Image (cartoon, rainbow, N blue to C red; front, side, top):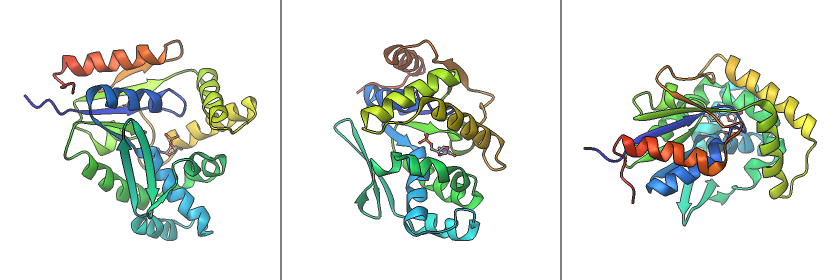
Length: 227
Ligand code: DC
């Protein structure tokens, strides 16, 4: 039996995908693919080069040329853009304001989807994003759709940002998340939606440990190996 499975974890911002996906990957000894970080890196480059984010062709060119590397070492994940470590910078609020138009760009999506498929070729993988189970890995072994109430999601994001030294207004965060949900789920190309064959995990009242154990148990039941 193939014990190297493809696990996809999709869902809206702040549903707990990132912390859960990282831990699930590390418990199974799998590669963690943070697809959102790739959209963030392209957005950073668009901002750095002062490109109009609405210019589909120019933004697509940026995505084509950008060298994006995801590095996982000793449980730490790093993202390099053209050789430079941008792990913290891509989490800054300036990125969130522009990213929806970058993520809505059809050309960018197909370029990044190819890179993501390549990463998924060689080992067990936990792929996190919005379209991992629907578009990039439609044949994944286990598809999870994580969700939570807007309030719970905003509070989590608030805490995460605070821990990285960024203080924001909670109400503003709630309206930004609401706006981002709307854009993510109504965009024309690869909108955020639940794959028909995915399992819903509502994390509003779940601890991180519970979320991780729930998914790891499901993966093991499918025969995923644990290293
Ligand atoms: O998961 P995140 O917050 O880092 O995602 C950042 C943005 O990228 C979010 O607005 C949606 C977009 N995204 C996407 O469109 N498709 C993905 N597979 C991952 C993220």
